[in-house]
Length: 232
Ligand SMILES: O=C1O[C@H](COP(=O)(O)O)[C@@H](O)[C@H](O)[C@H]1O
Image (cartoon, helix red, strand yellow):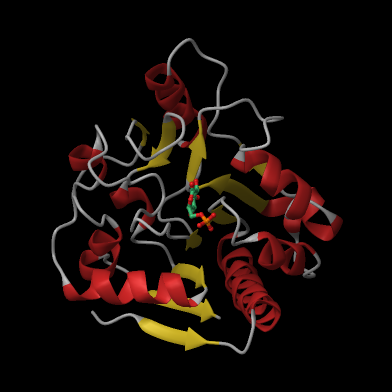
């Protein structure tokens, strides 16, 4: 299935349009089931989108928010994805949402992954909305090139769970939802910005080695259609 590409003049326009689309999908899930789930990425790209979404008028009290992936750092650490979400998304109207963290204060990242799996198991699958990002090395979620648990994380029919991930190019150990947990979402978005990432995406689309560029797994074999949102 070819991804659908949506291009915008700049990051602000993209943030508004993506916030509209996500709010619309969450509202539809609320209408149909009385509950909705939103699973977001961290990093530097989503901040403007988070701020736009936080003001959208939906019943946030029935929305569960969690992370696609997390750095194994406490929630007040500057590199924490939880901190980014707390300061930018869980504000304004979205402050009423329920947030489930992936990080747990455990002696090992492996134990934290088991706890995160337990803590998120109550979210009914499939997730309603998943927003992925992508690094310049072709990682998405914490599916890092040559990561120690990459094969397990990318299993097409693997269990829905959170795994630990260690990789040379990740600054710290990571926690990540598995490929199978993320890629059957009701709305599956890849949000990237800048020419450099567009070039990385083009390179990923041309090749097949998922160990080299794990984003290829999403582009080539996600069960849901992938909507790519891009701005310069
Ligand atoms: O480390 C991470 O990086 C990716 C991409 O982040 P960006 O800073 O290049 O936007 C992100 O999607 C992921 O959630 C995060 O943990």
